[in-house]
Length: 445
Image 1 (cartoon, rainbow, N blue to C red):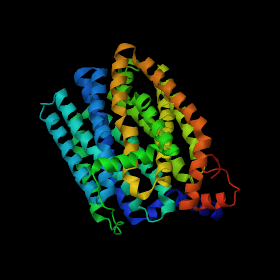
Image 2: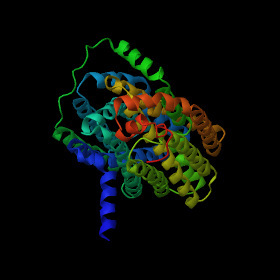
Image 3: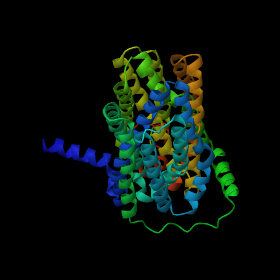
Image 4: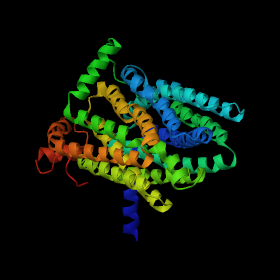
């Protein structure tokens, strides 16, 4: 019994090892509250649009306006993240997001809300997120004391997002059905106070001296040449962009399936989104339990295939249990794919280009998504939502096949980086002794 409890404690310690950093603990505490509100607002907003219009096309439009700023502005945010104090930038973006949620709540509770209000406020939030997301991704490395815990911190961050995804949609579904969408927006606005307090309470070491600043477009070009001139980074960004364009838009069509295919209401929609969150949460817990980056390249391929299988099964399902199971699989695949790609990038890129590379990752994951949302809405209106999702699944499978074909070249180029930087000690030692498999292909932990 003692041996078992000791093993369990050791396992939990490994799973949560990034929480040994005080600043990261504060971040987790604040974000855990804020993200529940974020998911509540996202679900409530989608249901509000569909309730007001009954249009799958307008669901796509709202998704488009909330994400298109990321494509245009995130690269600039990446330059700022490499230039300025990232914590101060995050305080500004979080405060603006809180204001946006308050304005959305006011329009709904006063009864003046119209679809154009939602579209405009979605655009405003999109602008805020275009700056917030790459800055927050770049800031992660400053909050973690031990560099070896960076992969664990990324996985825990994704676990936190999807833990909130388990709670937020369910609460939103219940509140929308009983009190209306406006209450969800109020609670989201209030939730930003938690992350603002956490950011203010952090104690950070002085950052490295910033190099002489040049014109924004020059630094953008420098970051672009670095990211797309290096095969492993380029392959990851292109795969994430393809999945975001063709696969991830399944989420904007979930209200259509909830109402038209499964003959449910707001509760059904909330449960479907929660099912996807369950799968994603399981995927990030699995990643957090891993002790190194060994095997992540192969895992990216497997996760992409699982995601495609999940959305294909959801597309053809006509009953709630199968639909829930399909979204669990899709959620697991999607988040495992994204978090694995994020971890690989964060551990191989050069520090002075971290902000810009993570901004390109944000563009690939979120900035491309509005075209997928818009296209999915339009395609669903012409050929049908089921055919739309099946097409997306086929594209994701094709992307997985191409990435798998290039995996040997990716291994070859990443290996010397891990040896030189020594980010993951067991990886470097294994390669120096030439007894380990390449870091992106070895399936062992």
